[in-house]
Image (tube, rainbow, N blue to C red; front, side, top):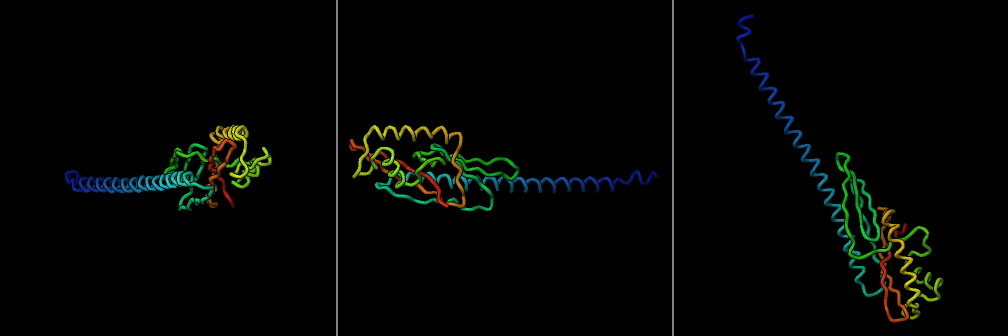
Length: 201
């Protein structure tokens, strides 16, 4: 028993083995953490890029001189992400690697007007038809609408702002987003520009 007690080689060997295991575990955990955070960082960067592209397209569409529409397609990704917007903000969200929420918020410089479900018009042409049916004028350059009617229409449109603030418009990723600039002319030679936002199947 005594010679065995004096032999410390086994103890030293065990200690070195444990140290090696600890080091290997630490390195492995570091690699996993780096991969996880890098993956989330890349995903957030992609969402931020998409939100920026969409916001810039809104501005470009608003700067057009004529009534015109453009399309924006949110691309499919290897992960699931959601897109919601109000008249003031765009929010893109996705689930992170550890179940955390990745959120990217973009404040619009230009205010879009999403379509309400109970709205009787969607496109710019349908908006002019709605104005004609409601007020008797299409609001075009050749059929100008009285200023007081435009004021009433603006009041109704502005009333949708709090609705979309609490119930954001959800973008269906598989369908393109239509941004359409519409110009309404009133009888006092003033133009009113609107940026309609809707989706088509």
